[in-house]
Length: 189
Image 1 (tube, rainbow, N blue to C red):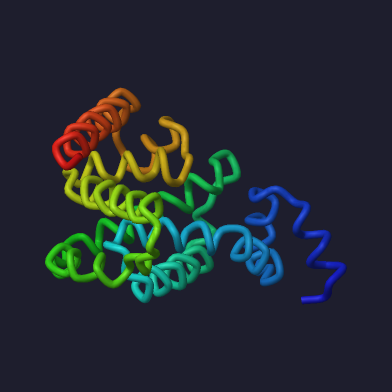
Image 2 (image 1 turned 90 degrees about the vertical axis):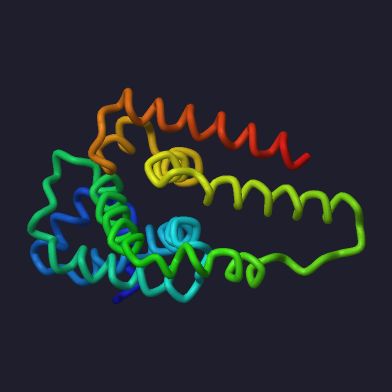
């Protein structure tokens, strides 16, 4: 993509880029990919038991679907919400495979940061590991709402649209998740 075209496209809002993608605009598609791929990679990583290969595959699958379903996008809706709804649905499909849950413990051991000899770093790593386990142990609806809201920084209404639940239900799930995590962390500390 030519630098001047790319620079001009980078200034456009997501909805305008998607209009161009809908008309077959590969350059606009590349800008959206640049804008969201890394963030969604982190989302998939957290949602899929910290499997970096699977997260990368899911990002590719998601953007393939963005291109395939580009005519389904309506500018009245937030592109980010539409994108995360598709990402969430990919995760839900993957959850059906129990292998993710069975392999969680071994996967977490692989993604731990190397131990450094200072007490503070060791404590932080242990806390992160405890928090990660507490979040992964949440019931699926609570975990999903928690991760979308806190890790992806989506608003409660956006999360509600993504998971297909009323806002009040999403708020309840987030509150229940926080209470459970707090209880788990207190038990472990």
